[in-house]
Length: 570
Image (cartoon, rainbow, N blue to C red; front, side):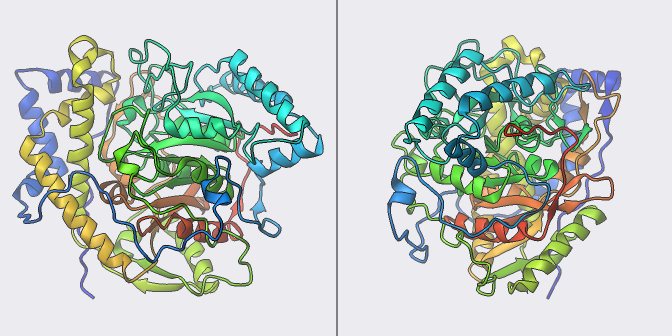
C-alpha cells in the first residue's frame, strides 16, 4: 500500500497581547495588509491549493441521496411521533463516574424522588455557583429565571398527572447561542448582534421544547464560531470542567462545558469545522454531527451555509441518540432536509451478546497516528477493545486530505466573512482580535478560490464515499491534541495560534466538507487527566451505526468526575 497521506504540519508563530494587537492592525491596514495577508496564507499552503488541477464540477452543498440499504424502522412510534422513545436495553454498562442521564431524570420524576421544579431550582443555582468560581465556568449566558421556572411547573404538572411527553420532559437542556430560542437574543457570541429577542425557536430547539425539555437558556460559544478553542471576550471564555485552566474547545464551548459539569445531560450545538466534536472530545462527553440536512438549519445563524450541521452534545450515547431522534427529520422551511430516509436507531438496543462481528472499521493509519502520542495511545487502546469485541479492522487510504483541508478552510472562511460583511463598517472593531485576524485573512480569498474549493469538495466526497463502500466506519482520534492551556497572556484580548487550531481540527474538517455523519466519544485520558476523544465517520444517514459503536465503547472507557461537577439529582 502506498502512503497517500499528505497533510503537513504548519508552524506559524503564536501571537498574543500587544504583539497580536499590532499584527491585527497591520492585517487590516491598506498599506501593509495585503503583503502580510499574502505571507500568512502562503505559510498555510494556499499557493499549493491555487495550483491544484481539479476537473470535477463544483458541489456547493454536500447533499446525499437516500441509500436503499438503510434499515427501515419496524414501528413508526419511535421515530415519527412528536416525542420518540429509545429502544429498550438491558442494564447500562459504564465504567467509573456515572454522569446523570435523561433517563435518570425521568426515573426520578416517575418515582417521586424529585420534580422538574426542584431540578430547575438546583440547575439555576448551579449555573450561578459555577459563574462564581475562580475562574468562572461561563457555560451559560444569563438564563431567564421566570421562563425556566414556568416551564418546570408545567412539566411537574404533567409528571404528577402521569402524562409526561417523554424521556426529555423536565430534563435540563442548553441551547447554543448560534440558534434562536424564543425570548432570548441570539448574539452568536458577539457584543453587538442579537439586539432584540427571538420571537420563535429554531427548528431543533423547538423540537426539544415540544418534547417537554427544560430549556435553561443559551450556552456560550466561540465568537461567531470562527475558532475552535472556545475563547470569547464579550461574554467570557468557557472553562473546561476537567481542568478549568484549559480551553473547552469550540465553537460549541458552553454546550460541552454545561454537559460535562452536569448542568444538563443534553445540549444543542452546531458544527461547521468540528464545533460539536472538538469540545465534546476535550470535555470528555459525546458529540454527534449528523448527515448534512438531517437536522434543519432553520433558526440557526447564517454563518457557514454549506458547512453548518446541528446536533447534540450529551453525557452518554443514549442521551445523544434521544436528542438526535427528536431533532432530525424533514422541515418544510429547510430545503436541505427534504430528501432523507426515516430516522432509525437500529443497533442501539442491547447487543451485549451480539458483539461487533458484523462491522468493518477502516483505519488510514498515517492519519490516525498524526496526533499527540498520548491521544494516539488512548485511541489505539480503545480500538483494540472494539476489535476484541469482533469488529474487523481494515487498512484504507484517503487521498488528497491536504487539498480537502484547504478547501474546507477557504469555504468556511469565505462564507463566514460573507455572513459578517454587512456588520464590518459599523462593528468591525467590536470583534475580538482573533476574529478580526481570521476575517482579514478570509477576505483575501477570491471567487476563484471559493469555486475551486467546491470542485475539491466534489472530489473529496467521492473519495470518502469510495472508502465507505468498503467499510462501515472510518476511525480517527477526534482531535490532534487534548485541551490546550489558557495561558496568562491570552486574557483579555485572545491569541492567534493557527498551529494549535489546525491540530485540533486535523480530523474534523472532512465530514463538514462532505456532509458525512461523524461522532466523537470518550476514549480515555492523557497523563494530565485531560479527556481524549475518538471519532467515527460513517455513511450518509447511518448515524445509527456510529451510535451503536460508540455505545459499545462506553463499556470499555472509565469516566472520571470533572473538577467542576454538579449533581442536580443528589
